[in-house]
Image (cartoon, rainbow, N blue to C red; front, side, top):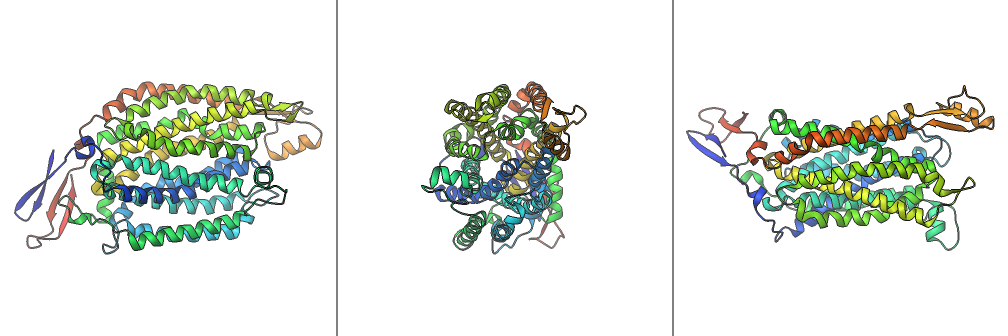
Length: 527
């Protein structure tokens, strides 16, 4: 396929080739770029890992409800809403600095400064006693996620031009591996190294108060790391000048938003959007509620983080292992296979949560046997492997169909659709699980224990809040049924999408001179 461009009285053609679809990858000359992308995604994962650790810390506080967890889940919405400012990031930049570095450098410096701010206020945000300040936590981490979402727009777009066209499939490997490493540091280290129980049990020879580092110290260290890496990239990494390429189009901000609208009107994008917005409902309860239910059942947050640490090895290695499959022409085939297995895996989680209290308690005292840890590690590890297989395959598909001329906007649109599907389903299952759960006080059947005050009243009178109907199991069954329906509807549709001609994912452009005498200045009409 070719699209015509008008330059004065001459017509030029921009050829849409299949180089990024069919050519074999060759990393010679791209190894340094792979390392830089891994580094950028790692520091992105650091902040996301910190955000993901907060719900685990909150759940260990008995004053926090599932509705509080639902409110905190709103901090991830900037990842969903980043599409609103992605065209601005693509269009506005300082050419001398570089299209991507114009945003990357200041945003990452602000992110580093924000770590300093959080460090200074962390004891007020997460006090050792009493209820955490949920509202302030949401505000602080919402802003932090906004910054990292902007960095994600920049890095996703830069990856499409930093790597050779036949190597863009490896961008998903850099994304997932880097995020896994960063998330491990951000979530596991933040929780375990600051935990008195973990450090006294596994690190120290003599018990002492607090962890081996404080949350404040760790956050200051991360802030310094952010500043240092950003400085090195600003000085030493040169950005490719894409304006020298024949197919380069310089759009202003308004034209970028119009471009976004025209991408959304593509039939292929509309079909893909419907799939991405609904796929996560099949696993929402498993991914969001199950870990919290394990903590409610008696598994400590430290144990959960230790298990997560062991799984990070699989998270880091898995993208490297399956890269040869996802960098091929049909990554969505792998995605669909993992989707079906993950739906069946919901059944194991129902059984795990149901039997956990029986397996880990002896005469009402929590005493977790070794075999339970083995079972838990196996189930959670396979779950994470399925998650990452789907994630890597999806990102590889995005990289292959995105137009590198407008990489930031295109990749952000696709990621936004996926994140929106995850955000609404996560919020919904966390919000609804309490509504579907019915309790009553063992001493007073009129007390439904629906609020913390009623629960405290029951406890004060010497009773217990007994669950009569557990909303978790209702949600799991409903989600699994909806997920199976989704698979039946979209299986063949997604297989067909990945075999479409590359031109089906591109928007045609016609360059038009502003005046007859202005040979070098153009407006761009999106058609």
